[in-house]
Length: 139
Image 1 (cartoon, one colour):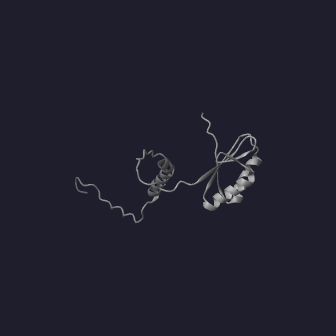
Image 2 (tube, rainbow, N blue to C red; image 1 turned 30 degrees about the vertical axis):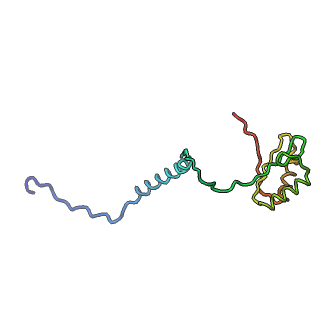
Image 3 (tube, helix red, strand yellow; image 1 turned 180 degrees about the vertical axis):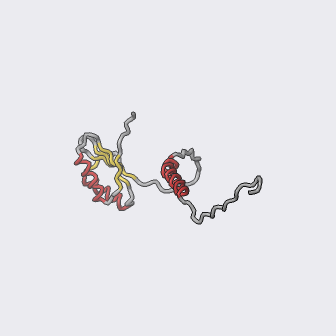
């Protein structure tokens, strides 16, 4: 052994396989991060949209207001109406535009059966879009 030289040893053989465990770990962590943050990104954007003088994007859907007061009386667009006349008016509205929406306003003291009768009249007339109008209570 000459002076100042370290003993030589054979070099390690190159690895023929790639260790994928760290890669899989990183990918799983990224997947979890994306799963958790994706729903937050869609609702977190607040915009103040500019206004324009262009035309409307689509026609305003036609709506009919039906009111059932505390005594169970029916009012169509704020006019008193009988159930038979209501059936005819709703049928003619459905023939004009089948996508007409019925806005149903019922007093809190009206029995549920009376509200269901009004809904049944609308469905028999051919109106399938019924919206229930309620008052929002401030906290």
